[in-house]
Amino acid sequence: MGSQWLSVSHLESGTHVDRCNTGSAAAPATPSRRGKEVVYHLLLTPSTPRVSILIPVYDEAEYLPALLARLLAVPLWDTVPIEIVAVDDGSTDGSGEVLEELAALHRGQITVVRHGRNRGKGAAIRTAIEHASGEFAVIQDSDLEYNPLDLPRVLAPLLEGHADAVFGSRFASSGERRVMYFWHSLANRALTTIGNAVADMNLTDMETGYKAFRLSLVRSIPLRSDGFGFDPEITVKLAQRRVALYEVPISYRGRTYEEGKKIGGWDALWALGAVLWYGLRRDIYSDGGAGMLDALSQTPRFNRWMADTIRPWVGARVLEIGAGMGNLTRHLAPRRRLYIASEIDSEHLARLRVRFQMRPNVKLLRCDLSEPKDFAPLKDEADTVICLNVLEHIEDDATGLANIASALVPGGVAIVLVPQDQAIYGTLDEELGHFRRYSENELRAKMEAAGLVVERVLHFNRITRPGWWFTGRVLKRRRSSRALLWVFDRMVWLWRRVDRALPWPAISVIGIARKRES
Image (tube, rainbow, N blue to C red; front, top):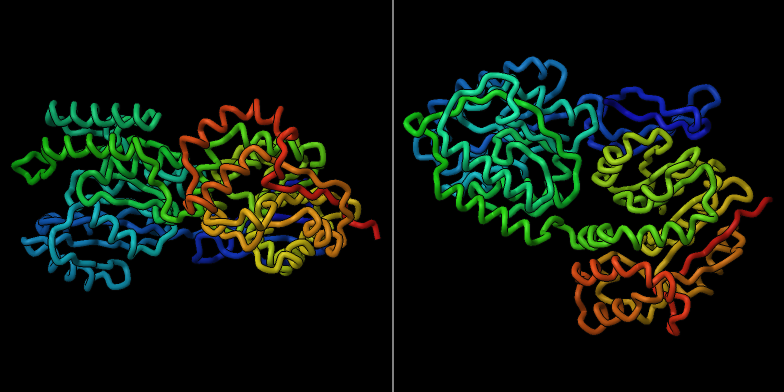
């Protein structure tokens, strides 16, 4: 855990790991020097990440003082700062007043938010997420069924940087577990089994109360369930996002119904409905543009086609601009001496860190194509710069191309893919944030003006042009059909063979250029 020190003068020698103080989840990288060596700081997991403990509360006044005392006594908080966000969901037993009293005793540690009426567990958790300020968060039920001393175990995979989310499993328990209702346990296991089948996972406990995650990840997911459907919803959506999800064993001391247990048979049926409802949909991105990128990430054959098209020009020391979710990185990074995957989106950087943690040649960098200062430490460092579907997203593309040229060694290769033909610019381009589409001559002229000698221009992907025009210009839709993308991807073997023979212009052009020697 800690910051990754990315040495751009001697990157091939490895990544230096150090710590620096910051409160942000992915602080902007800043250059510094150690002797003659330029060092670039990138903090993906802060050295002291803050953990937000989210507590949905409904009529639990008698348990709250003991719960808060146990939470605040966890030894991990001596080194990991926390905040507690408790949401009173319209309680009628004075739970809100008890929370206010406890918050007054622990100022700066406990935030209390109150719902005017009972809206359900899912709604309370959503409210807590909105008010949380940590890098990571964990849900803590407001009764005493879950032991806060298990929290270090639940949070460890997140704090160590190899998980996006962690579930505490009552059924993989290595500690004590109170013997409880057979039918309740059977319903939990049945729901988990159905959820696993729908989402293609192997969880042991979908309905667990201990769920921990990176806050930026969960905030990017539209959560809609108000009640106990929250657990299957977030589980299915995390699986659909293909996150690194871990389980750890926890202890469990369940309550009886006489002791205040609230969940019942109807809640189990509702949860089953939620599994099926969300499993048959793909409502996993709050941002439409990110949803489009996710749809394209589900086309691995197409991504391989794109990677194979540019592979002959990719060298040993590569800088990829706008790596996104790593769809191209996974194809191009193997067997490179150094592969720098850069991004400006903190959530994408966090996902890339987890996804490529087992590839020591892959280094991550926060880098904005429109900012010359981000490229100053990278001057003359790469023999190849790959910029696919990024240049059209920045208004000042001349500066972007100049920045690409600055990162190349003399004679190094720039590979720039952009959308072609302004005549088919439509709602799909708008949704993706495109400023423009290019012509071959325009791309050539702008690359030459940046000091890049264009050696070849490739026309890539003619097959999708009619569909792009019809969807974005005629139907004016803002998303492509996932079903059609699924079919398209499985026919890529054919498209690769016939694409050059199609009579209309390609949807993209790829400029292959070298940096001038002098």
